[in-house]
Image (cartoon, rainbow, N blue to C red; front, side, top):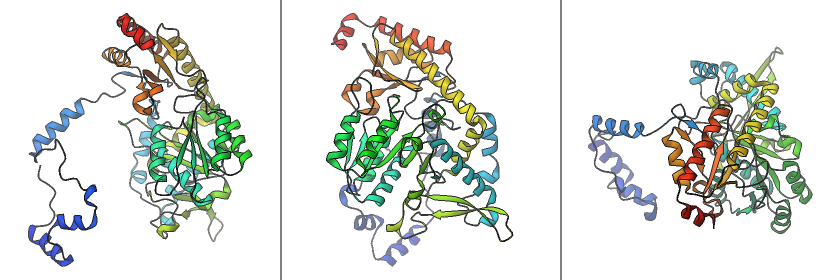
Length: 467
């Protein structure tokens, strides 16, 4: 397939001559440091014909396996929840697919109202006072919340629970480095898997951070004592407290706003989002009223016109597109409005009673699966703390062999925990997610296959791993 070449060689030469360089390579060399330039990409051959490229891409796509082709216990941030058919029907309507930023309220009332209703739903869900028109995804929402703390408190350390999602932690470190804000992890209690309040209190007193970030539940599925963590932060006074929450827990767990937190963020994929091989999704962002002018992105507001009729407008647009770069609260322009609209539809479909019912169902099925798996010889829980929807178990055997055995039988048993966290102590641990789509029979089947795989492994290998 030939490269896309909208200009002729003569036209490119004329443009290069106009700006005073002899070649495109020279143009890049003048702007980009040499150590950042890639001379060649290993394994990338010469261009190929279109039909050859298509055949190659088709072969690569055939290696994928969707959750409709196997029983999936994968989690780690994205989950195989049921998405009602009406969500796709409504989000596929042209009036929702085509609009961009609703700059002209007189022709964008439907989009603006949907955005306003989404913000209202997020506030009710999190117990916060204001919410924005969504952000890109969960990890970028965490980074944006930390930047809000930097704008509010100035540069300084950011404390982060070791239970934060690894991708969110990675995004936060990437963003915080140029701010001059070191990111410091607060370890989890070795037995329960919860953030250690005493270590947190010590770190707050010693480091005097600008922000403290926690996950509820944490990456291991363990339910944190959010009220206690909020109380510790409030007692020390200095940090902005940030909770990265799973929205589906908020029907059965106390919302961050009731626990004294300043900011609540999270990943919106569980709210009516299909997996789609990893995206797209949206992130939500809510905070106390006092932080309104520091919030990123866009905020829709309700008002009345000259004749007293209710209407909707963009009340705040604090992005670098709209104001001076150094005054912007975010440089990520994507609000993921269509995905956020799907989240609103999902919440309206569930309602408060449905959200509580679903939360209870996830708790009970997760408890059953954890008990059944940990009753198997060679399986024990990674942590003892209570969990929601997913949990980690340690296998006294070859984790790769167990996963391969299960997948050959059409069951994906979960994630290799250490592969995501990079922590030695998570070695040979499986992260298992249980959604409402997983039946008791499927959970029993998972337990049967894990038991078979462990029983088939050589005894000496099991004993070595146990030591």
